[in-house]
Image (cartoon, one colour):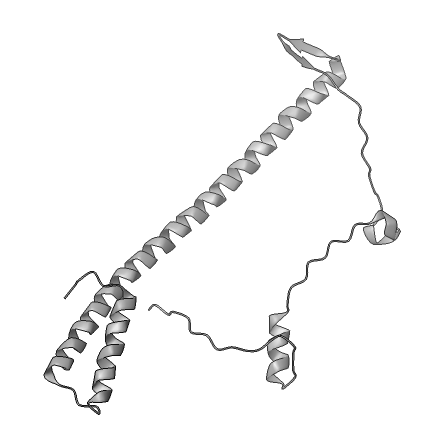
Length: 165
């Protein structure tokens, strides 16, 4: 037998063996029994190999998450330092005027910015931007369907999730 079977071919083999058992009306010949034992061993071996890959990928994903957290903190610190340095340079330019160092010139320019001291809800409609994100409230939908209410386009479906102990 080929030892490089994937789960699909192992499952296909199992279905074929069970069809033969059905043809024999439940009789399990020594040959079919041996094929089932081999099939079960292949399945166990492949399942363990899959589990190893799953655990490895989950571990790697956790490492990536940790690295993202580390880099996010580093980015925040870097932005804080940059902001503080720019603020100190601005203070110096305000105090001493334009500063020229070699080919670099530090100066100020005027710009405008809108500052609103009131709550957004108090502004007239034409001065507000409304951002709406809608998503289904699956808990409410599930509760309604369980109570017997019809929710168009929605249903409760039973799914199977892999549980690894």
